[in-house]
Length: 54
Image (cartoon, rainbow, N blue to C red; front, side, top):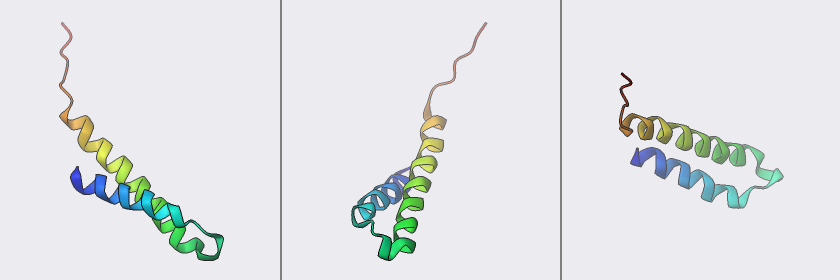
């Protein structure tokens, strides 16, 4: 989970320099943010307690 949080954070920091002249690098940072966000959600949801309904 920590790894995905760092990847997402670095991707979001990299989006500060979003520029159409370097669109390939900008898209890479965008996808890094997406992978970090969705990857960390998988681990976060696995730590949530399970509820048992009667």
